[in-house]
Length: 414
Image 1 (spheres, rainbow, N blue to C red):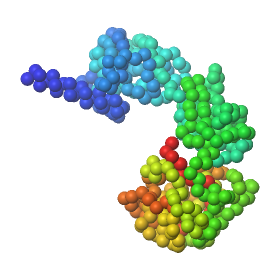
Image 2 (image 1 turned 120 degrees about the vertical axis):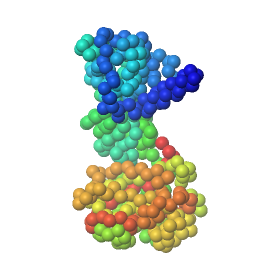
Image 3 (image 1 turned 180 degrees about the vertical axis):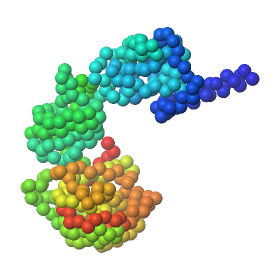
Image 4 (image 1 turned 90 degrees about the vertical axis):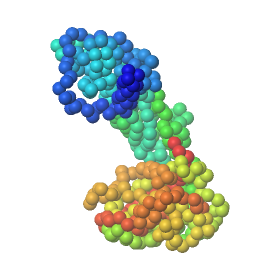
């Protein structure tokens, strides 16, 4: 019987620790059934460890924000409040015993760093304990536009993009080109001017907490199969309307969609104004895929500039056979496609952009038929390509958008 009880206690303890590791205790703040009582006296912490049973024997003197840790000591039930530096932690009475206290390190970056935990007792005594809250290196996840000219204004997005008077945030482009004009810094985004001489490559950000490198490649030219300059859809049926207005151009020509779109679920707009068909054979492309990276893990990208509101009809992207010609891919369920509808949920305001932006769609999301039904397959015919705003089985609001597109590409996973 004793062995059975001991095994049951161990199982329950493991479950509790597992739930804590997932952070579930943060949702149980109001589960007090009246059995918990704050004790008198002063708490004492012997050491701190991670709550994960697999690493519970590792003692720690610091942890990253949101990590789940365990304070081990005596009379920990005397703790009423707990602070990491100047940030209050969320306590759950279900995970406090006389000898252990499980808690998540607060997710907010401290304003005043003392490298201490402060335990506040029921009698309002404050007991400090040495412990560091670690802030991660900066994370650079994406940029507003990957193909922006020198002198253009861009915004990078990520996390822990932190400025400090003792060590200001810095940005370095590929080729060790320093950014000299930063106009706005927030924790999750930074806006700056692209310096003269910027090159293709990763973007590096340095803060007081470390260095971060972009997960994308700035001005990435891998996998481009339509740039509308030397890589066009000439010879194909509906090669698309090209323009090179220097007011808008990133570099040379871009594809221009414009005209009127109805708001019905199955609108068929002006095909000449809203379609571009790249038939590989008719265009003189080799009988080979338009890109070489793995379909299952690659990312489809392009730059877009929506000049006036777009509020109906899906933009469809379809890969198909090298020797395909005609309207087949538009409605055929044989060809899985991606549907892009950034206007959904925006009502009469529709969707516009403030200049060129980069759009990324994982190739695994090329899984729909023309009406938006999910197909159980990914593209396998990759020698031709269709892009149009003609149909999609989704209700919208009639509009007359102008949509500019450039640098259509597929790149390896970031």
